[in-house]
Picture 1: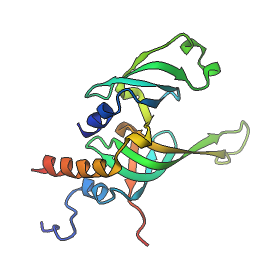
Picture 2: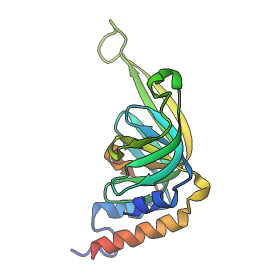
Picture 3: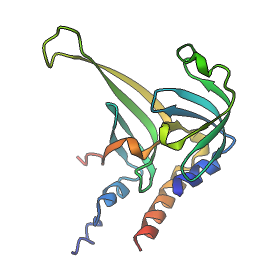
Length: 95
Length: 97
C-alpha cells in the first residue's frame, strides 16, 4: 500500500520502467493500481533498433509482475517522508 | 522470548534498521545493487537512492574447459530506483566497521 501511494504521488511525472525482458520504456506515468500495474503515455523505448515492433506504440499498460525496476524522478521523492511512512506501516501491521 | 532490547524480533526488523543506510541487494539474473534504502514493504519492494547496479554477464566459450567461463561486469548508476520485490534474493545491511 505504501509503494502504491508513492507511485500515485508521481502521476504525471516522467519515469523509466525496465522490464524483466530488458526492455526499457520511458514515459509519463498516467496511472497505477494496487498491483503496481502502470499506464504510460508518450512512451519512448530505449534502443529502438533492437525493438522495432515497439516503434508505433505511443502509450501502454504494463502488467506489474513484468517490471524489474522503475527509475523515479529523485526531485519528486521525499526520502525522509518515505522512511517515516515505512516505519509507521511496519509498526501498524505488527499490531 | 525477550529480544526487545536489541529491537530485532523478526527478519524484517533487520531491514527496518537499515532504513536510510546503504544496503547491498542481490537480485535474480546475476544482478547486484548498492544504494541507500528509503522504503520497503512486505513483498520486499524497495525504493533506493544513489544506486549502483552491477550486472554479471557470464560468457561460456565453446570448447573451453568446465569452469573457465569469462565474466564481464557491467555497472551503471541511477539516482532513485524502485525495485520490484519478486526479483530480490537478499538484502544485506551495511557492514558496521
